[in-house]
Length: 426
Ligand code: NAD
Image 1 (tube, rainbow, N blue to C red):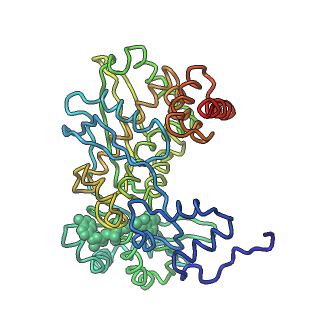
Image 2 (tube, helix red, strand yellow):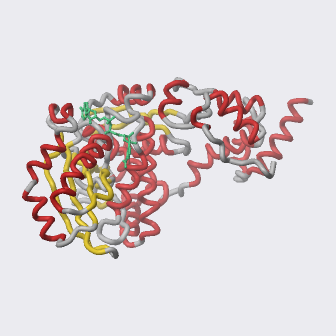
């Protein structure tokens, strides 16, 4: 056991079954565990094996639907995939509070992403930066030759920005290709363009292109969502005022702002997972945007307007796609998009921002009233009962007793499972 090695040459070349066999031996997995891993659920084994490397099994997350969403005057059923309890219920609940009129208004602009090329070892960087600008049309044309499909659809490289940055190895030139990626998340298109124009930029500047890749700081892909709720809808004037206080506290305390934003991302990432988006890109961009002024801030704000309504706003960069990436490969993502009924990346981004805003309202409301744990605890109690070995109806019996007695703990769940199991057996 102690001298086993994780160095497995050619692991990636082995058939899936052989890889699983090695892992099963390594971890002493039981037959049941192996057959669970082998279950790819609703993802074809071949597709899974082609999506990523070294696949040894599948893992299924629950796929749920948030109800009540009305966004830009249209009703949506929102697919969410998440491992955390209460998120879907909370989103549905808050969406109900924000249904009035056209519901949540959410607006995204054109879908522009930034492709970066970093040039180093350039002399007279400022002068060379201007020479790059001089050749802008030629550079954009070369970039656009890389993706005729995108260009035909009206997308492609639209503009060029050049900056000189001071680094500890001296000045460097940063070129930004501004690319309209239309309905794609855009990474492949942008990266291909960045790599293609790099030699041209080297020629113009005499420098060396180091990094040639998209920036996930998607500052041109901002979505703005806003909504208002009657105070009665959130539990009265007092609750509405406390929600505003919670929002203000997040503005002044980065420790709180991070958790505030995590609540927003609960909703956004659940939709991202259901539609197979690159959620790491979304998270990275969102948190960078939250810190754009040098201090980490909440992505949303809550206030009370002159008519006494609770009004919320959210501003977030969202890099999502309905073509390309895994969105078209994963059959469940395709079904999720069909349930949403979206055809463009812009509309998907608008829905996701709206879900983030609703999710935020639900979290703040719970926090300033009964606290976050009550809702969580119901499902948590069930999870604990299952972990303690309860099956069938025993799950509810154990969970309900723990909730009734206010003792939602694993040791107590075990005690109850033991007790009732014996009773059942007797
Ligand atoms: P993609 O390349 O699979 O599809 C986009 C292409 O589809 C376009 O370039 C265009 O040629 C074509 N197309 C057809 N119809 C279109 C339409 N209506 N709008 C736009 N394009 C259309 O997908 P992608 O979005 O470029 O790449 C996303 C993938 O890249 C994700 O899987 C992501 O995880 C991955 N990735 C991300 C990073 C990063 O974000 N830093 C780095 C590497 C890879």
